[in-house]
Every structure is written in structure tokens, then in C-alpha cells.
Image (cartoon, rainbow, N blue to C red; front, side, top):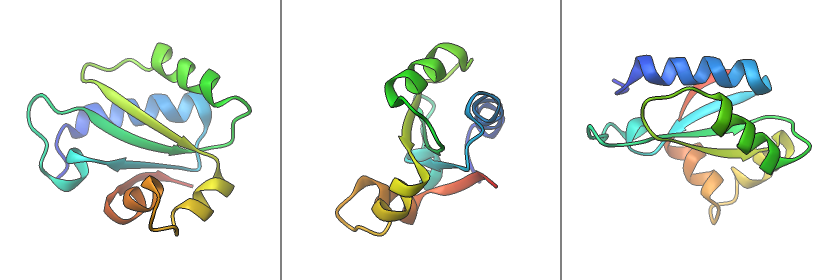
Length: 103
């Protein structure tokens, strides 16, 4: 069972409204079931964007959350390449993460 499900769903829905992602993947301790009360929420967002820093800033400013949330962004074409490369963080997310949204 995923801890903090209500909080994660709330953040997920806000992300969908902001950037219309192709996919959102939960990773880290929440995905592995080892989260503690003070754990953060780690989310990988696969979406189109022009300026990564601008989108990250928009997410940090506009997404309302109670627990710390970390965002990792990939464009769809980057994701398709990096998820298969075992030397990348994307591959770890791909192997250990949980898809919480996809279209």
C-alpha cells in the first residue's frame, strides 16, 4: 500500500492541471513502502516543456502540499532513451517506481 495516498493524489491532480503530463511516477520511499512520517514524496513527471527551470518553479510555487515534494522532469523523448540506460537515475525510477498517472 502506498503511504500518504490522499496527499499524493492531491499533488498528482494539481500537476495534471498545470502541465498535462504524459505520465507521473512515484518513486523513492513512498514507492518502496519504506516511508516514515517525515519522508518526502518523490515524483517523476514526463511532459512536454520549453523551459525546465520555469516549469519546476511553476510547480514549486503553485502546487499546494503539506509534505515536502521533490519533482524530477523528463521530456517524453528523453524518458524513452534514459529509462533503458542502466547507468541513469531514470532507469532506477523506471524499475522501482509506481505509475500513478498515465495517458
